[in-house]
Length: 446
Image (cartoon, rainbow, N blue to C red; front, side, top):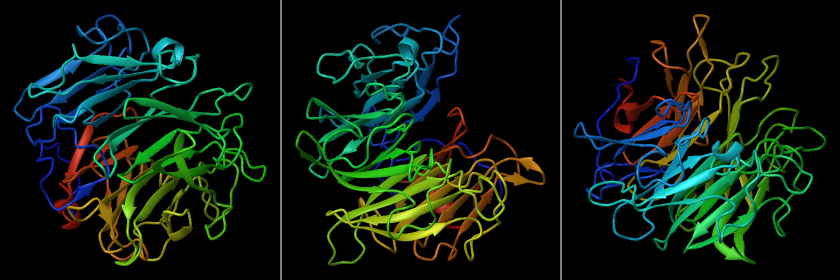
């Protein structure tokens, strides 16, 4: 396997053999996915770390947007972090995706989300709207450290209607600091929910960080609360799975899962961070079964044997009625999986599911899972590595192992999938590197 990664030009959004769990990112409705480069740490003029987002159109043209761009609400301020997160979805049905930009550092880390309308000319800053928790129609109030926009996930439900999920993992609920909350926009209406919302399992507690990870499909979505205390163990972590169906004013909760849940491997322990990252695709385990969710959960601080923070990942099947079955638990000591566990590998810090097929629903033969190992050490140098699993039941069957032995970049801290490629980013989101699925599954990463 060749090492290193090549930054690739744009690829057709709807073409190819795969269905990505991530955004399509076609902002100029030409059928070609546009490149998104996050630069939340960039200075804007003399304003430090105000942040920019850069859109590339595959023809050597690019659009650089900051909060000082005419038409963009607000203004560039120190540590705003504009562009720390992004998502895309076609909210107005014109065939052009809207660009959704998170600025979790806005106003003493209260946070802001900006939606920039797409058009045949690309994103149009003059047709932008910004949302905070002080915006009319958005529940709650903006407070320092809420982090509104720290996580984003967007797409379309099975009917085609667009949705947006916004995480505010620093949200305080009464005296419970950093309990966390999630905001859901669909059909022009905002809804908020958290672990004190009736019907949602658990209780909001200090440092739960509900909403620190988010992932959605056309039928379901998952919310990570990696700081959740389980059986007295702080920061053990929990993941909640929801459907997009609105019941009693919020999306319907299906399941709440921890490592102490029945049938889940391992046990909840201090600092595990179960749910630091999550990924979900729609899933049909058999031809006659109803379509449920396949959920990948990263547990990067899991202790395995004598190896601290070696890390692991769980793959879970959730039925539409909320029954949870563990398909597999994976780590670097799993039979057939390349390499071996070591201290501080943090296997599972990033997880991303995809479908080897053009449809949105995975089956046991079409599900793919990518797992980042951002602090994998090679020859005593921390460079990071990537696993891609083609068999969710027997992960060591066909495991693809891509160590970063060229040390071109800083690990695999973020993963996203598209219809043609796997994209990964460094700790600060940059640079983004793209690898075609056809090369990954062909055993040639270049």
